[in-house]
Length: 316
Image 1 (cartoon, one colour):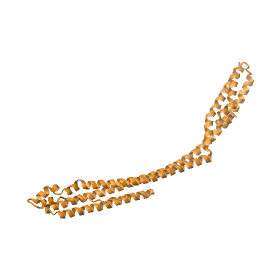
Image 2 (tube, helix red, strand yellow):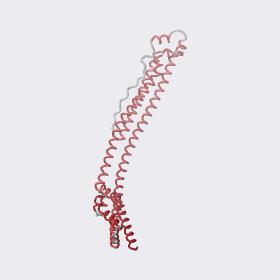
Image 3 (cartoon, helix red, strand yellow):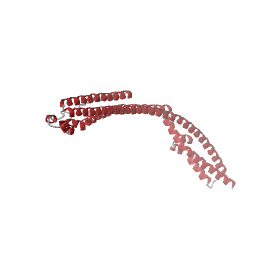
Image 4 (cartoon, rainbow, N blue to C red):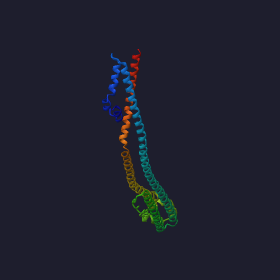
């Protein structure tokens, strides 16, 4: 009964078995005046043998439980490892999406910046021609043509970036919508007030005056060079950043769903293994044995001490 109580982790049952009371009684009896030494020694020997048998049985049971629990834990760990691998794969695909979005952004920014340089050069070339000729209509047409070319090239770069963003999301396994970029029109409303253009064409040393005071004569063109192009680039960069943000939010939502599915599947598989193997009950039994086997060992040691004391009394 004491062995069964110890195996079950039943402290009350262990106490009810009488083992501990019996051990204490033997100790009291050994120090009593009655000292029926021979009977005491025999009782002690029988009790020690009985406890040894119980210890051996319980130790064997504990060893079997430890081996079985170790095997079950390996299965549980394997299920978790497989889930972790799936989760890491999903996170890796998300990282690939982010890398593709960043690469597309860099390529887009580089292409648009190159077109901005082309526009700047076209503006300077057209202005130099105006300094020589003073023909404002020719200058206006050249600036408009260069600005339209810049807008078309920027639109093409933006479309390519948006397409790359959608392709990256598709590789991840989802579909995203990207906001359309607004057409970039950097043409100034007017290159200059008409009276300034008239003054640039009349009077003495006209070419010199146009060369020296070109920014005063052409304030619209000066503003385009100074801030117009930079503002256009900033607006396009902001558009792409917003497009990436929206796409990433959508893709991250899919990622979160996949990770949740993986976690639920792993939890379900581990629960199935626990139920199939009666893991929790056997784990509790192993814990009880680990707690109560030392109690039996202590009782045995006390009985052995009682036997030694009885022998000493018998020999005295």
